[in-house]
Structure formats: structure tokens, C-alpha cells
Image (cartoon, rainbow over the protein chains, first blue to last red):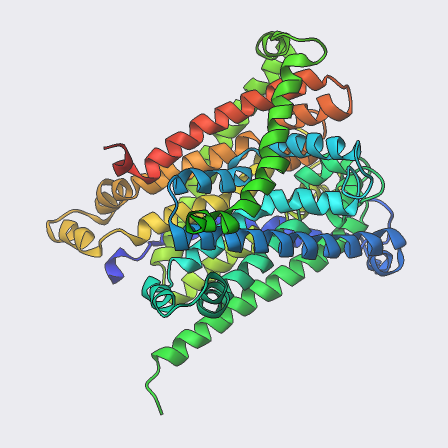
Length: 274
Length: 273
């Protein structure tokens, strides 16, 4: 085993690659403290003005608030649809299950820009009939995000269903449980972590969705990523550096926290009792 | 009788939703491609003959090939340490993979701007060190796009590679060692071939992702090195030619479908038999 551990040259190369992976994330930090109004590296004086923008500027607050609402709406909607769909596939194993699954995963594998154009078509068509679920509205964006994120929920829920013992469901059915009882009292309690994970993942995916959002919004439904996109294209607004630092910190806390907790749990499980 | 329709109660909501909100509108986009501005196939003819569109296709292909090769190579090293390193190394590598993975594409593109742009950190350092008079142009061109895309793709390439490496049977490597093969030979002639399926999977995955990539090229290319996805965006919102944009989308969808069917065969080699 030891003999096949990676050697020094491999380790040096990998360290360089790791630096490459982390460098752009670190580069954001100094830029966010610049006192100037354009992208620049501060020399001497540091300033928190761009962080103040985030909590004082209406634009940013509204963008964050809108993204949160759209995230919760689309994550709840798509997780519910995906859970029932995965249950249907798992409980009844319909003919053409492969084709149905392929259809459900389609928005995940299609090029994002093609999905974006497709959803643009969808929403401008809807705009002809109503003004609530339409182009450049909160509900329109939530619906479009749901299309994009529902495949990920299907994958997560199906994976956790694959670990459930089918005989449990058969026993419930043999004892006369109806469809509702089987789903809500027998199966769902066994996959609740999968469903929660699907909700969280789809929320994150909606929260940071940008490719489709660019196509389906203009001035009213400006989500946080849309706001960042506008500030990145031409004159770069250093407030984006500040929001980036905040977002990176959140990810680091969650990922490091999760890794450490997992290591601790493993150690505790491996340790002898008492 | 009612029993047979039960699966539909569960399956129908999602299928109806995706049919209405995705499949039908895509048919609408296909419709645009053959009716705007007038019925006929002239948009497809234009897409495959117009020198501007062709140059964008060609650039997309070139960038995708470079990005795929470099990011899969980098991912191979990361996966190697992630699977076979000591526990501490494994944990550190995992963080280097997962932290960038979870950070949004906009933030990562912005990070490269902060690092590489004219007033960015690298140019400032080089100037301060007296090595440069004029800043190096590192973004808003093809170089910036390539670097940003490689950075985005590496974590995605790591996953199929790592799962292939986890399946390598340690005893085969020991047998090769026992029969006198050197370390380099065991690695190149035994280990790498045993992970070939993972390598091919990673290559196809990254290529499929890269070919329709939109955000990173749009930000780091700065409108100068337009790739195919950005061209679609420009033909919808900036110099409108909806029929052409729709035709390019359909072509892109077909190309990706062809690549994906290759990928599926790769994942399930037995499915053909």
C-alpha cells in the first residue's frame, strides 16, 4: 500500500494545481477592500465602503431578497414534483421507465444556452396571456428555475430510494395500506434526508442560476446573480468583490464544517465503545 | 382498472410540467429556426456557410479541445491524491476540489478578472517588481477564456476519474510490482490503463459542458472571443436575428446529443450486447 502512495513529483505538481484552483478565490479578497470606485488593488489605505454598499444599497438588498424568495419557491416546487415522480418510478416500475427518466433529466444535460432560449420562448409566450407568471417576473423566473433544477432533485431522491428495502413497502401493501399511507407513513420517512438534500441542492442551484436568468429577465426581476452579471460586463463594480468574499466565506464554512463533522463521526464510529 | 392508472398520479405532474415548460417551447424554438424571417432552411444554410458563424464554431471547438485536455490532466493529479494520498493529504485535496466546485460561476470568473485584468493583482505585482512597463493583456481575450474555463471544469472532471481510481484492484498493482516492474512502469502501464474508462468519461463530460458554455467566455472574453453560446445570446438581444439564433441552438443541441449518446455507451458498455 505505502509503496503505491504518490511520489514527490506528483505531489509538487498537485500542489501547483491546488494553488491554481484557489488563487482566483483569494484574489477577490484584497480587491474588495479598495477605497476606489473601480476594480483596483488597494495600495496603503483600505476601505469597507463596498461592504457598506451591500447592506445599505437598495439594489443589492432587493436582489438578495428576490433570489432568496425565488430559491425557496422553485426548490419547494421542484423537490415536490421530483419526489412524486421518483416514487412513481420506484413503486410501480412502469414500462419505458428509462425514457421517462431521460425526459426528466433532459434540462440537466442540454446546453444551458439552449435551455435559456427555450425558456425565453416559454415565458414570452406566457406573457401574452398573463402578467404574473411571465417574462421578467418573480414567478416566471421561479418557474424557469424549477425546470432547470428539477433533474437534480430527481437524481438525489432516486438515489436515496435505491437504498430503501422494497420488502418494507410490500409488507405495508400486503397489510392493506393504501397508496397515501405507503408513501407518507412508510417510504417518505425512510428517504427524508434525500428529500431534504434535494431541497437544499436545488435551492443553491436556483440561488446562483445565471445563464437562464439573463435570458428571461431585464429590469424588474433582478436577482443577485443578474445584478453581479450587470456589474461585471463593462465597468467592474468592486461591490462585486465584496459580495464574492461573502459568498466564498459561506461556502468555505459549510464545506470545511461538513468535512470536519464527517471525519469526527467516522472517528467516533471507529472507536471502541466505552 | 383504476390500479393501472395509479403510477400516473405520481408521474404525471413532473411529466406534464416538463412537457409544457420545456419540450413544447423547444419545439417552438425549432419552429423559429425554420420560419423566421420566412419559411425555409436558409437559417441552417447561413449557420453552416456564414464565415462569421463558422469562425465562432471553429473557435469554440479549438477552445473546448484545449480546455478538455488540460483540465482532465489537472484533474487526474488531483484525483490521484484524493484517492491514494495519506488521510491528511486526502482531506486537503478534497477541500481544493469542493470549495471551488460550490462557488458560483460568476464569482469564479470575477476572481480571474481580479487576478489577471490590467489593474489586477498579477499586473500590479509585476509592475511593482519592475518587470513590466505596460500591463500584460491576460483577460478579455482567448487566453482569459481558456484559463477561466479550465478552472471551472477541473472539479467536474475529478469525479469520474476518482471513481475509476477507487475501483482499481490494489492486488493487481502489487502483482506488477512483485514481478519486477518499476514504479513508473506500474503507474503508466498498469494503473493508467485501468482507469481508461474514467479518463474517457471525464473527457466527454468536460467537452459536453464546455461546448455550450456561456458565462465564463462572456465575462473573460469581453466580447472579443465570442463562443457559440454567446453568439446565440448576441443574436437574440443585441443584433437580432432570431431565426439564426434558433438554428444555431438546434445544431448545438444535436451535437451535444450525439456526444451524450457516446457518453452513455461509455458508462454502460454492456447495454449494447
